[in-house]
Image (cartoon, rainbow, N blue to C red; front, side, top):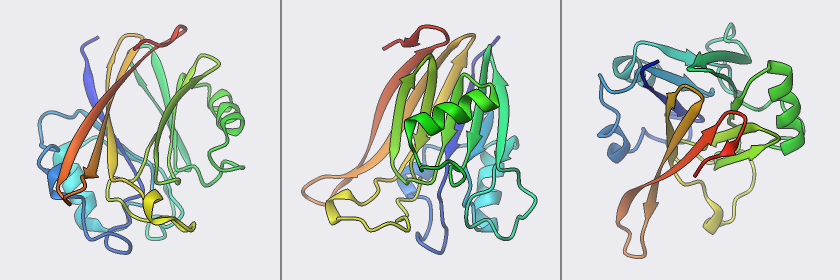
Length: 200
């Protein structure tokens, strides 16, 4: 099967907690390159919804804690790419929040190889018992409802997944500010192979 780039993002909170997706991210998110978008909730304005639909008409969304205008969104969904079943959820129904054992139980319940979850506003990716877990963080850098120390404030981030057969290559984009106040987009890569764990 041919590869298909999948954009994973969540916790946007526009305009409530952030004015927009950062301009340096928007320059990277252009139509024709991304086949599908998986939004992990809190897509709280129509303008951003329309922007995402321009990037890829196949926009899949699950309900976040603040998606009050869209009461019929599902809490969880599953899509298939290559031989991988990919489940996604906002994460507010996982208790305790972001707990690896709770996430593993959710992945088993959904019968997925990869589980994407949001709600923490922090990027995270790891393998546990043959399953791959990814939290894309917040694409806008929106603060959460928890208390944050200044040095722990969320770093804007999103993920692109390239799936080929049983291999998922995850590209993590983070907007970091250096000591001089200059913003730069950094990219990291993590690979996961079904039944064999983290590849690189």
